[in-house]
Length: 244
Image (tube, rainbow, N blue to C red; front, side):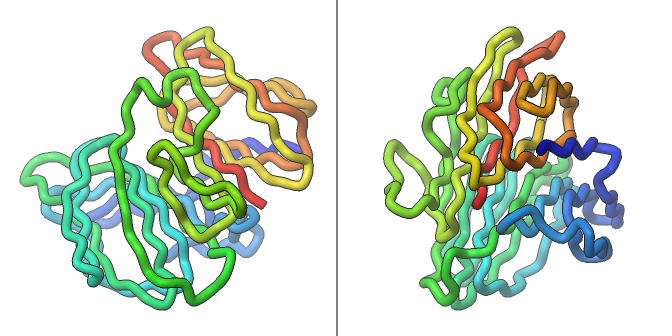
């Protein structure tokens, strides 16, 4: 079964300091029928205005993945991490027993756009941690073989994979027009796909689906997924998450 959620169907939150698109219930958006997808609790597409951001606040027992799409995001936490994350950087934070952090836009002139996903951890009460790394185009071009973030039990991270305390694997491929990749979806797993830019075509048992930027697909009990780049200009970039 595949459900496509278009960009327009997301909930828009507009404030003086931030523009957000919520894919699941979050903050002022409360829809019990759209509260989560498996262990994926939140997927927010945020744009922070210059010199604005989330002031330091606490979390616990959450696995949080952020991906900077444009601009620069400044991260600060009570583990002592203070760093500026340029576009193309993925950061992973295990809140565990408790962590406080802030995410701000240090720029005087430009917005920063970043995507953030929240996952339930495999077990509560882990030691808090944070790490980040910048992705290259070459490592992701027309490939879906190595996850960027890996929390699967029994599959230790390698080749620069970031680790989280949740049974998920997250990929961020770049797909050239006309190129196709296959994702072997396991029957007992879910797949969440979000298109950041460009256009793609998804082929599975339920049919053929065309996705535009901001569209997402929630997939269960399907076949191997064929994903093809169909952009008329430029490449397609998307996030694919394997979820229990």
